[in-house]
Image 1 (cartoon, rainbow, N blue to C red):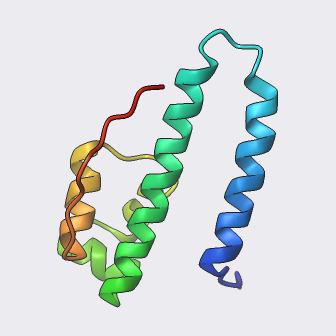
Image 2: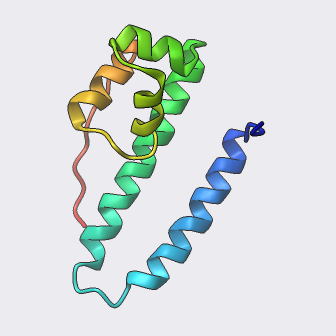
Length: 104
């Protein structure tokens, strides 16, 4: 049985992953674009988990509200999602997203 990690533990792991990953790809000419894309995915996953926990829902309950399966919701949290599915997930948690665009 897997032990659940705290939000803080996940953040630390995410930070460590980001640092390791960035070191590997800095030589790529598309580095800035790649980093922005990965960071956006990680940030989306954390926002989704935070929204779910604030709503007091399980992944299965979010899935039911979305009309999908719990395994599909779990895959979304690993970065396999579209902007539309991100919005649907947040709506199932009683939230909505606002997008801000920043210069790289």
